[in-house]
Image 1 (cartoon, one colour):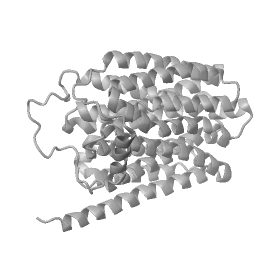
Image 2 (cartoon, rainbow, N blue to C red):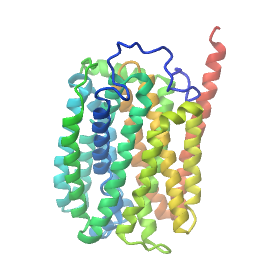
Image 3 (cartoon, rainbow, N blue to C red):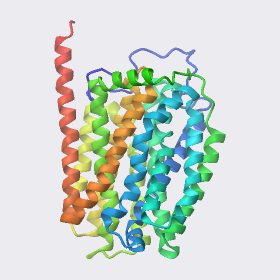
Image 4 (tube, rainbow, N blue to C red):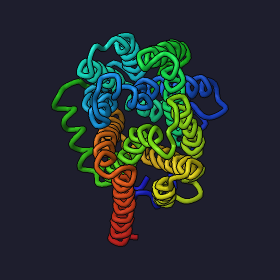
Length: 422
């Protein structure tokens, strides 16, 4: 990937041929399917736990007698905890190994999940959710670093796309299951069921994930970590990718935090189980994320980001209609655009960082989940102030930010090429 490019060039084709002696995993080769399925399950568990309360916010609001913006902190706290701790956890993965840290993260997160259904107050629930998000912080950055080390470069975008697809399945299943369970037995039983599912995913993940063969332990010295982080933040391309991930997630976090409230109100007035089923549109994200590699191959990274941003913006505008089919169409477009953009940006980070990959991915994940927390909170406030149109306005501004950053990066790439001697 060109150091100054935001997406103009493809990241599917390697610049030099991979030697036959390369022992890294490749599609069709031994261990690749096990690795893909293991990380897919890790993605399922992560997103199912992380967003387990999102579809339940109207019930949590009524159960504790709080507003939508107050209840939204059960989502923002989890994503905020992940954003705060993802960098320290990535440093641990550099020292103790990706698989070890990912396993420990899942074990702690599912253990906290046992306590979540028994939270006696909103404050206790928010605190537990923060700790759960902090525990999950060891997974996203370690997973992308594991893939960058263990998978051949030509297959990296596809492999990360499958991991992101697992995220979408986890987010979908968590919301759909909690919606129907909560309709019959309440939100506490619903989050308990998600905890049980996450336990099964965690066990299968540990049994399936191949032992790393290309991991080299790094240093835990704070000075070394600080220098690595400083170098990444001094890279203009990485900073642009971090901002793009945060902005995409601002849209997504805001939309899916508020949509339950909108659909419980007139003219829709849907029951909780049906609202949970709305999240089946996540399947669209599974497809768009897993095909991100082919999209980049055809359009280049810049073209893929423009398409993702345009699709997301179109979905936001379509969702303004007071028609359930059009709202659903809008959610489909938003979901497809978001997951495609996220897969493109996150894989570009892994491709760009040649050293300190876990820290590079951690910084992306930190920005990404800061975007989620911001979107959840600001989206709920905007909904309270201006209804669904307020939430859509926040999302459109975020998409314009994505487009602006991509345009500026493309100009920077052209300037650098013009200054580079032939």
